[in-house]
Length: 127
Image 1 (cartoon, rainbow, N blue to C red):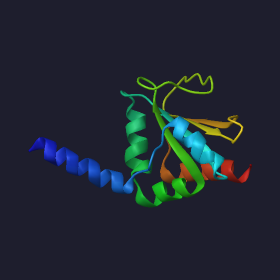
Image 2: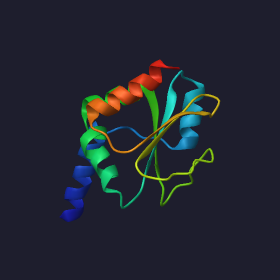
Image 3: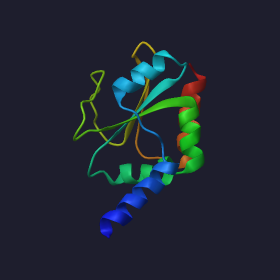
């Protein structure tokens, strides 16, 4: 019974959360679009990462807003290879990557929707 409830919860959350890609997939997608890659790096035991998911990424409007403007990539510091020689000093951390695979901006920390939107909107507009 618990497995069924967990599966249903996962399906429900995925309907409204950000549709994350892997980094290699995102690079291929980026070649066909004008979007910047947004790499979100989290850690398994990071409570601030949980806050970002709950308060920002699981919000339907915000997840759509992110996907319209960026190619979202989620990497776990404990499980995934981190690309581009990125050295992570804290989680969550966000790296914004152009078509030349150059990091154009790094934002550390956990944010609420309004502040995060303001920060990443400015990155998009400053290209």
